[in-house]
Image 1 (tube, rainbow, N blue to C red):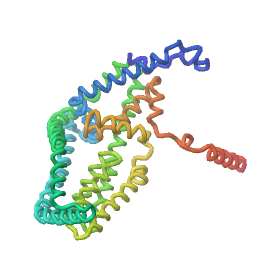
Image 2: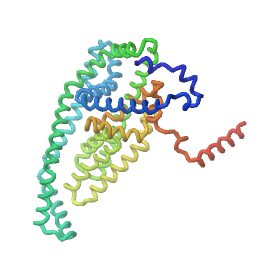
Image 3: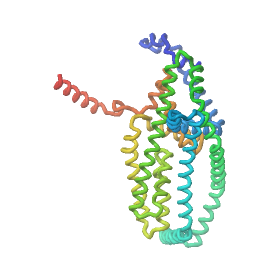
Image 4: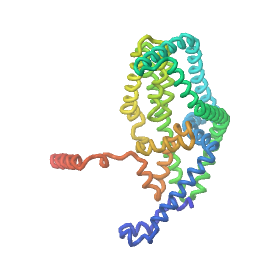
Length: 395
């Protein structure tokens, strides 16, 4: 079955200039669409049922790609493959522990001022209560009654959300054990796995299989490596901006917001909420919160239009619409983890689709449209005239 993916059909090529209505049997298109939709539904159902296994495996693939250059470098200086894989994994764990310690230590420092923050929040809530009373002619007792009713309605949802959150935390704890183990074996057995794919698809396609695996590696490395670089730059911009505004624990909030960039498109916006609320609770003016939200929006604009395009560039170009839809789909399948996995998995699928002749149209759909698909007819005509004039001058 796999061999057919890499074979160009001679018969199809010969009949490409023939009228499709005369060469395609009646009802063939309908059956093809039906089979494709059925296969897609089965794949989605398979992924949903086995998400407890698939999520750790997918995270392990991404992290193994990031650690692969470190492992290879260690092998070049004399480490055995097993020791190189273990050392690279150990260094990654140390970095994660250091980052976690920084965030936890800062959280404890913020918690030491909890009494002042709570009193400030009570003052803000009192002012909000007075404003609502004056605006809507509601007494304090009416506000309390309405608040209790809304809380009672929301409690079942809160309980369900808390249960889901605890389940997610349990999954993350189990992943903390399973993922490092999988990463180690992926680094240690990488040549073995490559040989498996060659045997499964066919030794006659060895060159193409190895080239596809190399492209998958480059796609994931470029995306995740670029993302980590962008996160570092955004963390610095966030921290400096918060320091200039005058917010305490600026670097904690800046790093926290940059970590939330793992959530594509919305991470920085969500990251601005926490420091804005902290400013409302600790500062005398709400303009601090407005300044924080405004600065984070500026950072998001810089990140989307200048930082990410110049660092990641065209190395990983995905159709924005397909990217957004994939984020929704993966979040429905895998929850919070799906938000992180969506784009790197789509990059992998695009490489595979580009390598398989029968799937190349889908790889084309996943790619970012070029200028020729975005220009109006007037713009195309103007560009053609300009090109003709340039050719006439040079000719």
